[in-house]
Image 1 (tube, rainbow, N blue to C red):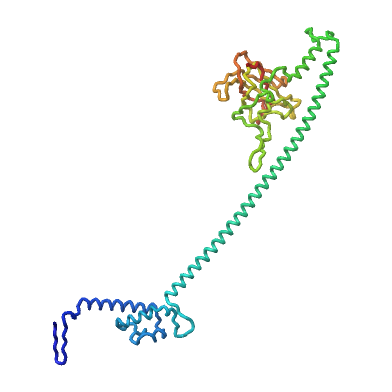
Image 2 (cartoon, rainbow, N blue to C red):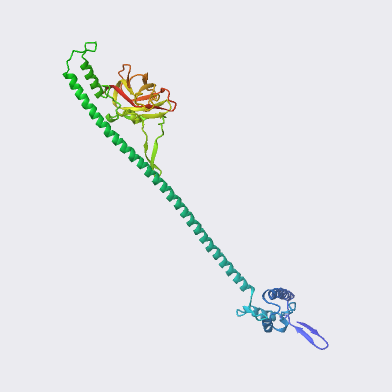
Length: 396
């Protein structure tokens, strides 16, 4: 026990009631920190001219005295007033419009930002949709124009093809009529020669002229050669490859929506077909060309016949496009790296239309031949081959 006596009064403290210096110091520090926090809160949440809140606070906690020392009890009272949920809007002294607290201002700012973001997002989506729709419309317009051009182009090509086909059919009909007339004349001529006096006229060799005429007519009827053509397309021959040879002019492509359907030009197949009118040939660029022909079977080749139109049938009166030097090689396969050279020949433009070239005698048979043109008779741009016949003996 501790006892203190004075002249007028005395103070007696028991050991149990003696305050701790440490606890007093902690409490003083707590009150100091809380007072500083309260001052900051007063500056943040209240206005200096607020009369409504000032009336509710005690006189010693007036807002006009922010530096006054407040007791813990007063601090608790102020804290309860400032944290009251009903105290959200404070009417200013003027009384014209409510002033919103910082928390409410922050909430309104958040809402405003949210609305602004939503508005920007909606505007962006609308702009993006408009841009996409414009691009789609433009692409649809381009596609429509492209397809319209393709369809009109295809229509023109079909009309040209229809005209050409009609012309071909008309010329074919005229040619057939002429051939029928010629055949009739040939038959009549043959009968007339058979009825004539045989032996009255000779060719100087003791052979009747009627027999010469008959043989010539028979030869003309037998493909004008009297020999079997083992490369004839209708009999089974076909073009296998043309190597690097380029047709002239380049084939005009007939397309539908950008896809090629067929070409409009004579291919190398023309040299295996019986047509021999001007233009019914295979034309290729330059003076050199090559093609591989599959025969109708294994053939022991004895010779070939090369045909070209005569100068009198040429529109220009010249046949400088006719092939000049050429070679024939026998092959066992398309990829044969060492084909057999059967002969090198030269076509004479001053000779007959059909010129026969005999091969050296050989027992070897081939089902493929390589026909290579080495030069022409002077045309600088292209060469024309009308027909190539391959003769020999078919091996079983």
